[in-house]
Image 1 (spheres, rainbow, N blue to C red):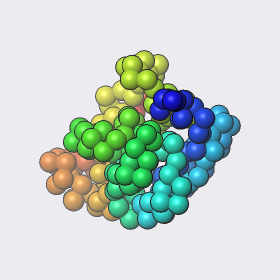
Image 2: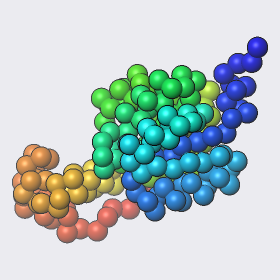
Image 3: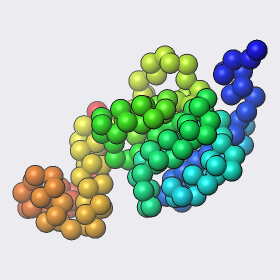
Length: 185
């Protein structure tokens, strides 16, 4: 009798779900070059339909999609195929959603930007702690990325963003006027 690892090694089907079309296309090409049989979706509805049609062995799912939450895709995948390995990929994460993703069956939770090698390492990991990144984002860059994400979610409304970040509006305006910080520590 074969193990789950043997089954997954033979089945290289992969579903990529992200509403950022440029990122989705780049990741699709990169994963195809690495031997995966890739299908893509840019909505929760499209991804759930793809899972119901033929559940893949692997999935990389963005947390926030235009029509809902990527965790719904993870849940549908594991209801259809319990041995599937899924990774949640997001530009805006927190501990609560990471815990929920793992409870629903995700094997890892990666922050954007993540390259194809990071994704493959997460998908094929055996439970060992991953190596720390060679070039992690600096604390200033992480803060800047978070502020930009909230700003975009608030439809570029400075007052609403400042309120949600519990920050003075003028302080936020100064931060937004500055260039993106370097990615070095």
